[in-house]
Length: 327
Ligand SMILES: Cc1ncc(C[n+]2csc(CCOP(=O)(O)OP(=O)(O)O)c2C)c(N)n1
Ligand SMILES: [Mg+2]
Image (cartoon, rainbow, N blue to C red):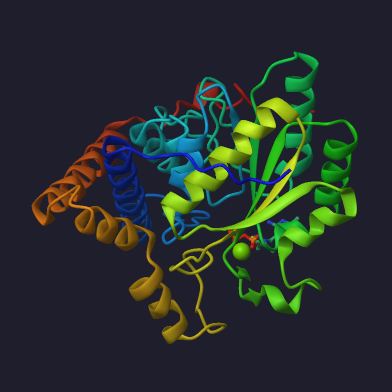
């Protein structure tokens, strides 16, 4: 299966995409700041730089589709419908968080929004996604399950088991490798034998391609055509999305494994928000003032989310063992 048919985007959708990318960036910037202010502790992995992919994919889906991801998934969860308030409160370990404060940064989850984690075990979401794909097939639905993973996660054995089962049983799972070129401080070229990660699909005869994940429009158009086809074919697909994270792997990262120039090159020349900004201005779909006001509106949403999370109470001691699986 190839993904050739292009989907057209109207002005309203492009503007909403822009607003969402601003929200995602501002949200993560605030999360980073809140961490340094010790409003929460533990792990914290920011998605800054990768917004074009999150938004492009989200717009290609419908609410009944499933999504799961790794631990860099605060804003993917928001894109899937969990409110910024509930995600921020979850980060702060508060009772109004989407997991009542018991999941934290790596474990955003909402059955209602079909966002099935937030997984801290690298690659751990991939067999679960195959299970969700099986459920969709068993129920004869035409939803799909998007399963994000990192470039390092695709070296995990369980991913190959999941891909094999998905291919053998025709499970509608769209595996998306967020290739941001590094797994913690390790360059992907030091750990992977292939030059393109989509080649991993060849072993299982799974349809595959790559996409420029820094460009929200290309991502949307490409993923939309894949998803539309998957609803008919009901087979898995492996997409390698080329992207880049600006911040460290987590909040404690000396960043010695890459150069300042490399990071700056992405920020100055390939930034997803900047690319859409230019497009909107060139096409006269927005003015400078409008762009600024939309970014300001994004900051307002983040202010509201943080104030909400600050005010939300800690879970009570009495509910310590509620919603916890103890075997
Ligand atoms: C099974 C397992 N092995 C190792 C780790 C430690 N670890 C956490 S993140 C990470 C790197 C993952 O990188 P990648 O998949 O590229 O995702 P990214 O952080 O770039 O989004 C590793 C090795 C883990 N959490 N789980
Ligand atoms: Mg990576």
